[in-house]
Length: 191
Length: 218
Image 1 (tube, each protein chain N blue to C red):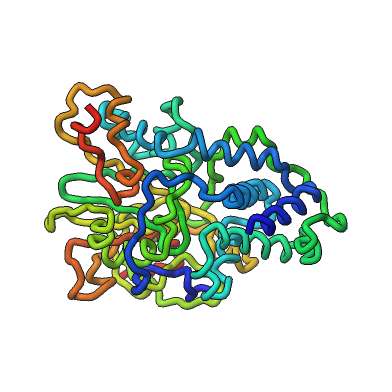
Image 2: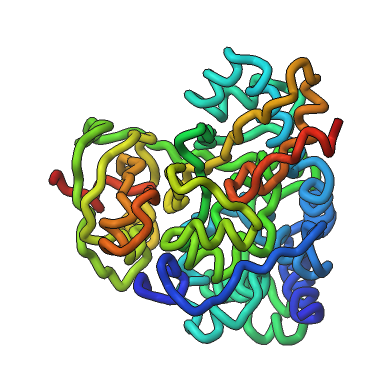
């Protein structure tokens, strides 16, 4: 695979279609700046700032870009909020659509056949693969990303975090909690 | 091809979801190069995101399921490079350029990686949206041999419009040479029982993002 990829890169680069230094820069961006730490900051801000939360749920792209301290997002980002009544979970059954700008590149499981096939038909069993069990009374809402809209889940703020700083709150927010396959960390593990 | 292996929603037999603790962004260096090449070819504007998807969906089904994620990205990119005559099979085999094809006006520069935001798929609408939040709709029973974003599990099903998301490039047209043909996009929500039968979990709801031509009033 390594040789085949290098061949393609050499050909495309010798023909002047790509600049290998640009490839380095793209890889570096996703290995450092663009990742779930961005999403965690957004969630933490929504937890402490009601006006931001409201804007985020109405226009996530605009709200995130107005923050200034996270990597910019393009179009069509939608934030969906978990409540006591509803748990949200995001999938792309047709390919691997994922909110790259706020969560980075998706983990292997998100792109795998087991997750893509089962999330829409037996989401509770999928959640149990992640060690998550929710009350039977909780509605499970699965969002299949079949167009260019991209979804991030805003998990509920856990109890016992009154007065916490935005930074400390962000440490509670896991990648999986923003995809809807996990829950936020236990505040006692972070305190 | 639409009714192919990539349309996985509701299939059985793939097993449990396997998790990996502290997973790296890329497991192998070549994966990072494949990803970055796909991104860097974007500004050449030779194909759209849906044409990219279509080149993976039309891989032989046995290859699609046995290849890893970034192998599929590589196979898709190689196909598009050959189809657009950007390079010959002999050159990919040789691992070097043997002739000149065309010169792009602009390529992805290293500093472009400072702003890796997505493109905007919104386009001017030729008519107001046909549906509004709360409307009952039925998805069409369509089986086009070309690319579509209406998954099989959500065809010919009763649902409800939850939100109007804007007027976007229509994947079904842009992949068949019919241009961008912008269409309204809606979040359409279905009860799990409509999709999976009366025996299924009553607490489940599933939504898709549906283009207007997929929907009729119900």
